[in-house]
Image (cartoon, rainbow, N blue to C red; front, top):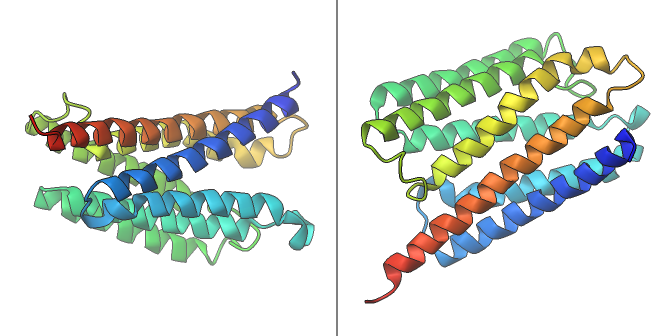
Length: 226
């Protein structure tokens, strides 16, 4: 298979895992009583999936096939939502304060670089890198809280452990991709970067799916009468 064929295959698989993650999450929320922002996580995954499908099929409607505004909006929604989740579920006040500062910092950077970058035709650069880095720190802070409570050992206990694992895998892989994206876009062959992006997207959604399934099974066992 050529790199382009691999890329097309991975894109299809990535979209498939996005759909499965959203569908599994919706079923999970339907079967279990979920409180707080986590109950909206499957709806968020559904939005991401639909945005990607719409983005893929509407390029011809935009000048020079440039519909990056859709992905910039999706990125803003993603960071605001995920920062809000970890803010809500963090128990330590200092961590909550830090996460709030992280979110405000991302929004400020988005505004400042709006004078430098045209978000209608350019992907976020520095705001994305700042947001993704600070989000990973927020997840690590949440893990640190669980370690203090000795809850991290039981991976099926907390859905956010699986969500955090998926997000960390994705951004650890995607940050280098975004750092060199503009450079490689000028070269003849940059498909390997998009292949890696597809792989990390698939791994992230697999983490979400596994988390939904395992936590759902645990909930069912708790409800089963002896």
